[in-house]
Every structure is written in C-alpha cells, then in structure tokens.
Image (spheres, rainbow, N blue to C red):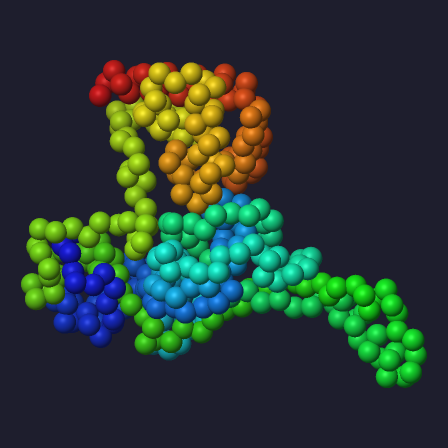
Length: 328
C-alpha cells in the first residue's frame, strides 16, 4: 500500500490525511468492517496463549493496541470512554517485566481463566492479552485471617497453623477504561476498507513505497516464512490439521526423512511458543521424542505417537507435496 508518515492517526486527522470524513470511518466501525486501535499504558496485563487460551505470563506495556470489533463499535456508537478487557498487542518490543504468573502474584490457587505454569519466552509477534489482572484473597484464606484476628481481639490464642500458612489468591480479569483521546485509526485498515485512492498526496512519503507489516508494528504474514506452492492441489485431501505443517517443512527440506521432519517440528515447537516457522497456527501444544499433543477440530486436545505421525500424517503430506511439485 502507499506509505504514510505515520501508520496510526487520530480520528480528528482523518479529513487531513484522506478524502474521507470522520463520519465515514465511524460508519465502517459501526458496520464492523474495521476496528479501532489506541495508545495503552497498562500494568499486569495477561498474555493469552493462542491455542490453549491459558495465561502463561504477566507483563507491563506502553504502546499501540488493537481493540475488538465490539469495543470499537461501542466507541463509534457512543463517542464515550469504554471499558476494555481484551486487546491485541501490536508493538511487542514495548513489553516489559514479562514474568510467570506466580512470580507476580504469589500463591495462586484459582483464576477466572486457565492458568499456565510453563515459563515462556517473551514473544516478538503480536499477541492477545487481558488488559489487567488483579488478585483477590480466596474466601477460605480470608476467613482464616478474619478468625485469627477476631481471636486475638478477644484475647484468645490464635491458631498457629493458620498464622503460619501463606495467604492464597484468586485471579480475576479487570477491564481498563479507555478514553476517546487514546483512540487511533490504522491507515492499513482505511486502505483495506476504502482503497488507496482516498489518501491525500500531502500525507504521503512516496506513492511507490509500501508499508510492510513486521514484528514491531503489525500482524505477521503467514506467507513470510516459506513459499506456498499448493494452490493447484485440491485442499480437500489435506484432511489432517497437521498436514499443512508437515508440507511447510517439506518445502524447505524436500528430501528429509521421517525422523528428521519430526525433529525439525519438535525444535520449532519447543523453541518458539508464539512465533513458529512451520506450525504457524500454533496447533501443537507440546512435543517430546515419542509423541505430540495438538489441538484438533473443535479445539479438542489429542495425542499422537511418532509412528502414527509417520504413517498417517507424513506419508499423506509427502504424496501431496510430490503432486504439488509436479503441477507447479
């Protein structure tokens, strides 16, 4: 697309940078053709793992986020501040204090969401997150503390076991309030919805330049890692969800044996939680030397042995890859 001086502009700048009115963009938001972005400064946000939907880490952030369609609709419809529970982090390089959940909150025993005790590396790609997570003392822990306090006030001996036990906590998601002044519009969304011709010449750097999504400011392109050559193959035959993953490996290592493919995949899964070269949709939850656990259709967790992978997934993927090579 045509490159602008800034990717994210304020609502009041729409008529300066484009031939559109603010009302044109608000109408597109109300029709859910696009969503709003905004500047967000928040602490104790919760990273959401893309497949398990669990929370493996807590972090602070100050940068641009993308809001959900429903939140964007509410902004456009009301023009007022809105509570925001989820956001897409568009500038992962601005994440700070990335830590495991229990390192931040201590003795957590329950939560509004699925807890993930794995220690994951800080991502370099966009991710979805809860805007704020807070901890509450569990009811049992609160009652124990209250009973101890009450006993002391009556001059009674406090329960030593309760006194020595650490408090336990429940985690809850809490929305943050986003003000209209924080809102921004992504010029890439404007081009996608209205076309490139709506941009004014005085807002341009170069009419031939291109705004290229990258890890610092945009969602990653699924075609950026390897070249896809399966357009001429009937996709109905790719029945297993892992077949696409295997074919991506074969595109870069066409002569690889079964165990080599397995090891390439295992390395990809174990070293890259959020940004994978082959398993780009993050279908595989975990992988060992002998088996893998993945999310099938309907997000049901399934386990597959190496032998089953070799016979049922790899064999079929190799046949389809060979066919794609012959017709390309």
